[in-house]
Image (cartoon, rainbow, N blue to C red; front, top):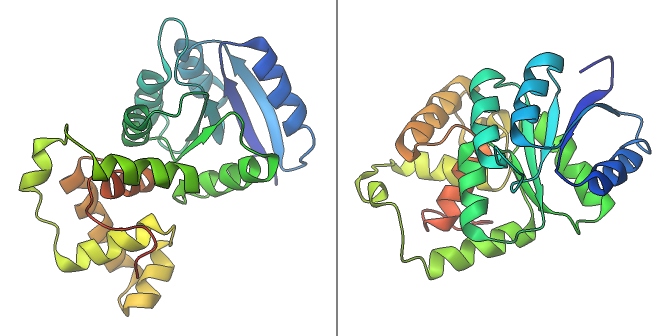
Length: 221
């Protein structure tokens, strides 16, 4: 982040989409476009070269796709937030993208207010799942015939399930600690354990996995 501005890269193989997003970003003073990528490989290179705060990432691009790019960016630039912005409303892609390390999943017909809310939340490290995304994940939970068998062996404790539920509601560690009467440091330890047991690396991925696999219900206390 430069001063009070968030540095943004747009990764999409369609020039008209990139130019449209550029115009939208120019209407907000706290965002600065620092690069454009037409494929995943270029996005990964830009992440290394300009170290943006956020990347808006399409999933299906020629050559390296978005999911592989997210994985490489997460490994090399863990502080860079990635928000998926795609035309594909597919639950499998959503879960794969979030588990790869994205902090949000939006469709390209999203309204401007939701787009900027999601972007700001993502760069602050918050879980960002739209109502549409949650609905899709819930549908997957109800009719999921290809669940990862590793979930049968997960052993989340009651406290971890409690914290996981709070994560799906977008609660921060500090707020979770206050709600449960425990320290923020203790919450962080639980969150690390949850990540390890679910095989994820971000709050959005933990939330998506929890909802899609029926481990918690979104909005539950």
